[in-house]
Image (cartoon, helix red, strand yellow):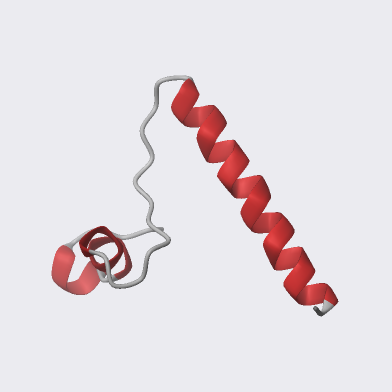
Length: 54
């Protein structure tokens, strides 16, 4: 595994941990890492669905 791939995995783990901490404090985060799911389509297709990740 390349250094870049290792960095991506670490970033993903870090972001997942931050989202868990935020959600435990009572906030909700709209996210999806499942390509093909309806939620993933809505989040990642802002032109037809109207939701923009930012």
